[in-house]
Image (tube, rainbow, N blue to C red; front, top):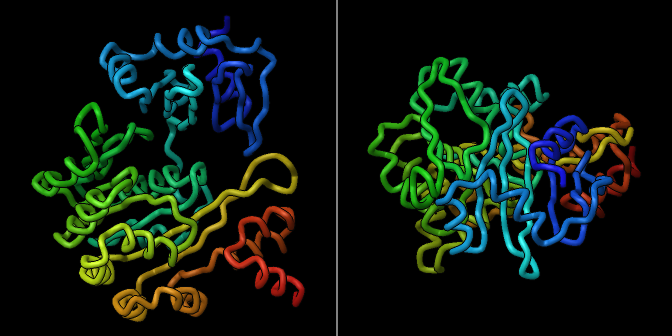
Length: 353
């Protein structure tokens, strides 16, 4: 049977993003967003166990046996790091693996919006990078932190599950904490992180009310807090943060968010029309006094108009970015329409071109 290192090396060589191991199927790669079955034999129940258990510590094996799921990281020297989720499906072990490049690319290397450089140098506040699973949120966050690391002297603390990109100190001092290894939970870590004198706190994922609440509080106390959410645009992100709280707390949270929020960057990936590679589309909200008033008054539906008229601040609607990509011939019509926030209005705007 093939070993895991060989499969991971092939994933990297093929330019894939993910590897899936499932009983009853051969190993499956995700390349340019599409699932591609390998030519290896179909995996038996003992195969997935034999592939993944050798890279797990005894403590990780125990956590998996107790919890029936586990997030870990793994590295092949000089090739890549990997984020691994181990789980049970139909009583058998399943594995989903995401590749993470060892070399951290910059904002310019990725061709990310230049306004991210200004966002990276903000002294304090709350910045959210949002998008569906697999949209490149971690990559964007890493590029933002790398920009800080090259330009300013800051103390950065990250809380991740698991650690993905590994940073080397340059101008910044960067401490990376992994849930389950260095801390018991996101919320518990955020409760005490302010005592570590951080200039910047990066939260790998805001999963619950307590984590969101502590992240907002940390931003109120003067740190720049970077975090991710699985939301598709700026307005939905604000609603999601506030709606997770009980009704009697929502007015206070709305006030806190209106005061601390600095920017929301929402992103999604689309396959290139050439069939090889993918390209990112972004929605960018920079929080101006007008945006703060809108959040405070609970009129989040007006956010779209404020983004549309906020080009001079670096703001842009997702649908405007999608339209640009399509008119440049980079992506197919069906793909941009599927990602549009308002498909009917998007179709109408293209008809007017």
